[in-house]
Image (tube, rainbow, N blue to C red; front, top):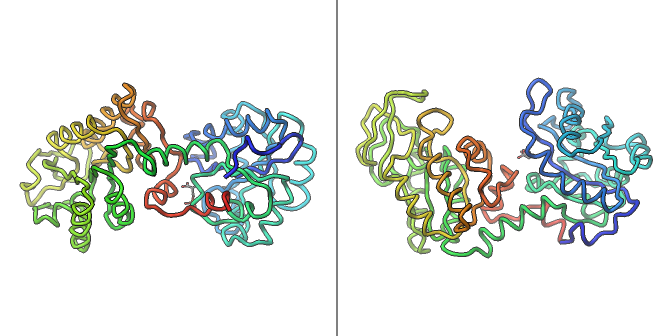
Length: 394
Ligand code: 3PG
């Protein structure tokens, strides 16, 4: 696909799809990571003399106008994150945004209203895409984190205007390719989280591609159960044990070493500082629930990290949101960050809770790349084609 280097942007209205789906509380953005992440693209467009006209979704209004989901509330934080003036217009189709875009002064950015206020957005309706297309002369997609959605603003527009990837889209894809498509080996993946059932495709794809797969979080309990080990009152998916065994068999066939907990921290209940014991993974008491991996498991993960050249991380290793059950996630994340800082490891992390867990560990800043994406990061790791990315190369 083309990048911003390949388009002539001087004097042009550059219709730019970004992801501004940031957490908001009482009308204020509480984490502006995604807003700051698009700054290189916006600045580049401005430097090249283009007029950035930003399109984005916010939340899931399902094709209706929901005032609490207006992008207007994001505009002040966006202006701060970009360091350039942002004008907000409460529409994304019709004469008003077009008039604004045409009159936009150099150095300014226009932000249009939530594309998901229109049913045509999620339906990828060609007529709606054509309405949006009127706002720009070229189309730039910088929303990697929404690229798993085949919507009018993420996919349809690429068919209607000369298009290119923005800088963030480029950086995300480059990091993922380096981590999984053309990695330096050994490649290690850490996959955590609550459920095997939501990460089946991910585990299935990874065992074929990586050299070491660490399975953590509550999903590891299902694997322990599949191996006939007691799991007490732990969160498990008993109906997934056959699947878990299949994944282990596939890993063995593919030469992928799977690291499961060899010891666990088992607590009375899912509560901060709940009374707990550290026991071998085959000795969880009947009345306790596994909330974290134990120190021997962490030592094994650290040993594997030291031997790895590439790391992909998705999901916490334990109940990282309650103390002290964040210990394994924090220790492993810090070790990965140290090795990365020392130039020994290329590390990529992403997806939902992962970034929050790495931030809490103070480790995210030293990872080689932290994705802004949740679902899109997962789908990429699952080996799926992302419609928003594919449309840029079509
Ligand atoms: C995200 O927050 O992961 C993206 O913005 C996509 O949002 P969606 O899951 O509502 O499509």
